[in-house]
Length: 158
Image (cartoon, rainbow, N blue to C red):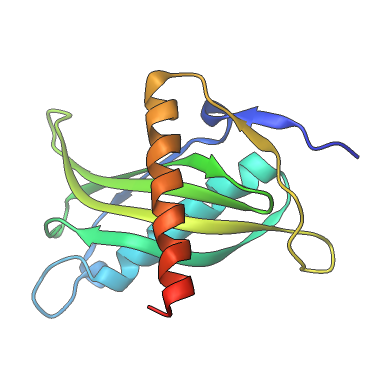
């Protein structure tokens, strides 16, 4: 069976949440663990759409909390595939607060490494990624640099 390729746009996912009282930590801000759950779900959905198979989270890189979110804030989470290896995919997830006027303020960025799984839960090849835009190509190049850095750190035992 030959592995086909898919466009970045084919697997993009966007979701919206409203911060409720049960999402707050003791300081009255969105609990980081809730946000990590939401963004992990988006990364999984993006990867599953791209690979059209079960996937698992292998790692989360560069998880950056830029600012807090508070009760009644509207949270918009956008995920897309930025890089594909043989069995893994990098998924970029950006999180924003959306104001009533539609203004989007970034509050979190993260990169997930997701792995395609076969019926035996072992890694299997995933479809290649078709880069359609200059932004897609730029994201691909940045992802390659992150991957190379990650491999160097692994070799150095960091």
